[in-house]
Length: 405
Image 1 (cartoon, rainbow, N blue to C red):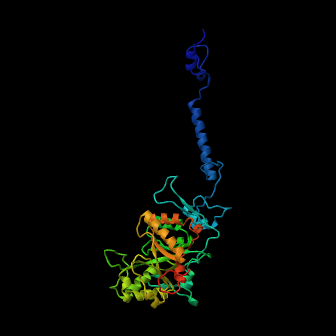
Image 2 (image 1 turned 45 degrees about the vertical axis):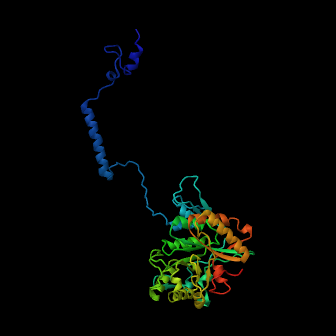
Image 3 (image 1 turned 90 degrees about the vertical axis):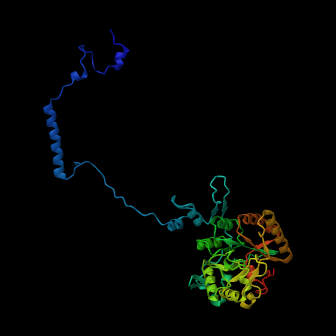
């Protein structure tokens, strides 16, 4: 009688039924004796020991290969950027910022914007873009107590002329715009640099951090730069321009030292613009030494128009200081409709007079409205020019009026 399927599947292969005709596999294999196994083991151990004694190799001559691993330090970032070319792109470890710097492309994403559909501003370098002269120029720089200072070089070369943005040739009404208060908030500063036309001049606060880098980035984008000079307002210290404020009650030497501090904060400036200053500007004894120092260093002075009376009227002529005053403060009322109305008035005034200088703050709303307004300004027959045009071409220095067309 044949075996059942269950018995076939569960019974070990080669094992017959107990007492059956087939013997199990274990019954057919010879069983080694214990003495023989022990002897073989001893022989193997003896051979291994002999191999170690003869060769000194515990592996007993087992085939193997060796390799030398050298640890190399990663190449410096500057070297990776310098070596990157279109044919040989930079390595995968290069950061996005390094790639931007190497290519000249600037990418700006508003602070906190991380979503894929968040607005991104990309500035691609234009081969025909105006390049400003390098700064600092050693011929126009001297060492001061607070750091490097601008100076007039040989042949009466002024920083105002050398660091200025060249005015592009053209016809028609001209507008110069100065945006002040940059260098404090990184997002606002980078946004203004990226979004505003290169002909718009920028004034940096002396209290910002990494001002050398900020100034360099602004100038690389084509913006000429100025520094804000903190000056005493009438309600000081309720309104406080900061710890380096020029005060009417201070000695002239102290005010000059604070002026020197502001001028040494970053290189490449074409001039100075007031930060407040209604009270200080009314004290000729305090003001004139400061204006003389600015003029003696080959710089200009811009009155941003936020103070009712001209800040340096009369005193600029005495010190031979190139000076100009903004006729319109674009965001005196910080509302979209008010800013748009001032921009329309600015445009009309430029058509009437031929040239107008205006000022604005670096508020986000102001940058938004300015960016929109300037998009097709040239198509409307009006040219944007740098603020230095008002300082370098003024018909009479110190008059504090707009330059002639």
